[in-house]
Image 1 (spheres, rainbow, N blue to C red):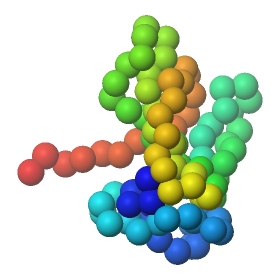
Image 2 (cartoon, rainbow, N blue to C red; image 1 turned 90 degrees about the vertical axis):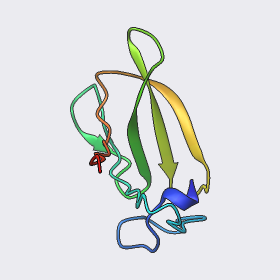
Image 3 (tube, one colour; image 1 turned 180 degrees about the vertical axis):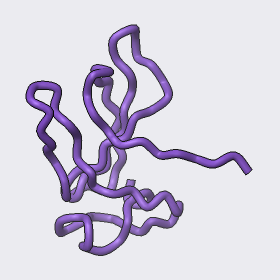
Length: 91
């Protein structure tokens, strides 16, 4: 996960463990929008991204980057959650 995270502390809270951005992805900690009241949580500490892979008819897989972990995590999440997306332009 560290190879996906933006380096430094402009956007990420310290310690931003393992951040090298060697992949060029430049993952940012935009947090997520909660399904309960529409508020945001985790800004500065958590980068949450949608995956294009469904888990089942209700859930989709998501990827998490965390400020104090160098790994990337995968969790099934309800489709009504609010996460970041990464757009890739076809070359």
